[in-house]
Image (cartoon, rainbow, N blue to C red):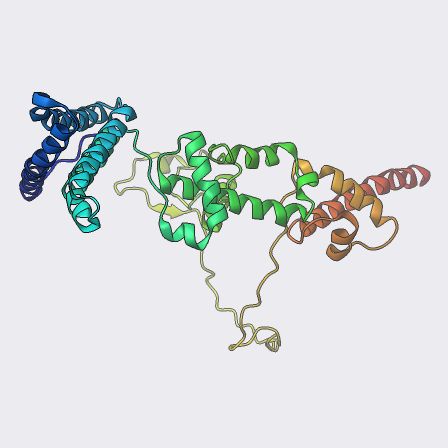
Length: 378
C-alpha cells in the first residue's frame, strides 16, 4: 500500500508544527539551564555543573529522535522512549527543587518539558501509523461506541483480530455477520439440539469461522433471486427446441405428365407447411357454459403453497424414521417436529420425502400383484 501523499496545506502545517516543537525545546532548555546548573553547583559538581544541564537536554532530544527513526523503519525499541521519559522526569524534578517547597513554582517548571514530550509522542504515533500503512501491517481499531453498546461480543471480536492478525475491522464485522446467519440457519434446520443433530461438515464450518476462516460458498445462504435465475436457466436448458414453420418451395411430382417437364417461366410458388384456414364458414351455435364461480373479473390470484425443498443426504436417517412413524398413524409436520425433534423449516422437507418414499413402496408392491392377475387370466 503506498504512503499517503500530503497536500500543500498539510505540508505547511507539518512545517509549522516542527518549528513550534523546536521552539518549545529551546525555551525549555534555556529556562531549565540556570536552575539545574545552580542545583549542580550546590551538590558539588564544580565546573562540570556548566555541562550537566546540556547533557541531560541533549540526551532527551537524541533518545526521542532515535525512537522516531526506529519507529519509521518499523524496528521499535521501547527502551529509548522510556529512558527519554525518565530523563524528562528528572529534569522536571531538578527544576522543581529550585522552587521547593512552593507548589506553584514546581508546577510551572514542569509545564514546558511536558509539552515537549507530548508533541514528540504525537509525532511518534503518526510516524508509526504511516510506517504500518506503508508496510500493510496497520490494524484497525474498534469504535468506542461498539465497546459501550456491546462490550462482551466486542471483546471477542478484538481478541479474534489480535489472535489471527485480521487487520480490517470491516472484514471482521462481515465474518461475524456470516457466522451469525449460518448459526441461525442451523438452528432453523435442526432445532434447538442442532449441535448434536447437524452433520459434522456443517458444524465444522461454524468452528472454522472462529479462527478467521470465511464460510465456503456452499455454506453461505443464497438469495431468492439467485435461486430463481438458476432454476429458470435450468428449465430453459431442458426445454425441447421449438421449430418454427418453414417456407419451402413446391417440388414437382415424379409422375407428372411430359408437358409438365417443361421448365416454368415463373418461379415456383411458396407453400406454408403450417396451418391453412378453412374455405367454409362454420358457426358454432352451442350455448356457452356459465363462467366458473372461482374465476371472475375481480378475482384475486390465490397464493400457491411453496414446494418443499429437495431432500438432502443428511436427511436420510430422518426420512426412514418418518416412514416408520407412518405405520403408527398419519404423518404431519407438527408430529414430525415433536417426534423427531426437528425445526419448522426442515419438517415439510422430511414429510414430502417420506410420503414420496411410501408411494414408491406401494407402487412397487402393486406391480407383482397386477402381473400375477394377468397370468391367471386365460
